[in-house]
Image (cartoon, rainbow, N blue to C red; front, top):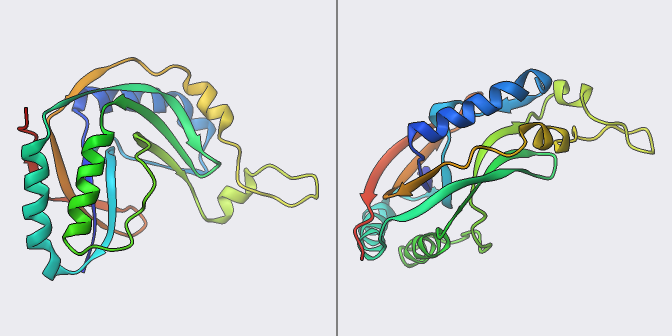
Length: 195
């Protein structure tokens, strides 16, 4: 049973620009786990652990989604965070219909427990560590307890990311192998060929 997700990988030009922006702020946040440039991606839908028996049906249905959707424009759209856990670069573009199609295809393939929330298009740049190093950098609350470090200064330090546009012309079924440095493997890829 593989842990799967469907993603869009931005072109190297975009990931290089993000890496340069991250290089400016990385030294001030050693408690974060920074995403390597070659692993930056936009998750359309996280599928979770998927039984191998469902994969042929999933692949067929994802192929249909790709044939129905045309390529779509995307561009970097500033930095932000999900609380104090994830630092990200936003992505603007009409990706929600594609994500909805992927989610429907996964559900019809028999995959349950899909996240029902709408797409918040982003490229994860860093995640808070769950170790003691994170705690040393955490801010003390009014009660003296320590919580996760505040990512707002990093969002501000990243400033406005370069406005780089690209065309999303394919999506990929990827597996993740967890560990100290998670690995992402492309299982299948489909070009967007709709009109």
